[in-house]
Length: 226
Image (cartoon, rainbow, N blue to C red; front, side):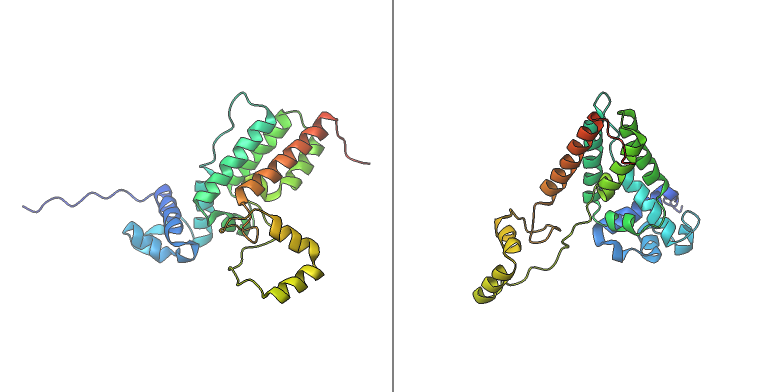
């Protein structure tokens, strides 16, 4: 008697998206294709198109999976603590999926999950008593930091050999403040802030600076200049 065929887990949109996230996590976003995803799921590529219309829809869905990992606000906390907690949770989610920030930046329209997240963050400011005008400017000031990543002035670059002493002295003479900052800053090897600055420290430093400034404006009853 022939043994019964092995029962397969039915293909669903959620299963497709989670497999795509796992593939991008393991091998990088550049490795993601509908063909490779189909192979990973053990189906023919055409089967995927019943659940995602194209690669763009796949990427949108992957963003929504990642944003879905962000913790909800902690009940009973003030607006500043709640905002801080959610942003740091968003940062943790994006750090678990290193490709996600690049995809979020590439989307021309926010996905439903991103819109829901932004709506909830605006709600935290508004329910905390911030005026609509102040909340508007706050969202501009926060920029990409509101969803857990920073668009830094300095971008990552491969480590280079230090310049010869004569050239280093010449550069320091021409750009003394850059040289002073470069030699004084605490660095780690895998930073995106150039030279290896501590990304997490720099992110939280800027976040706290913004939140404290926003709180001062709110307490002062800030209104926009006419």
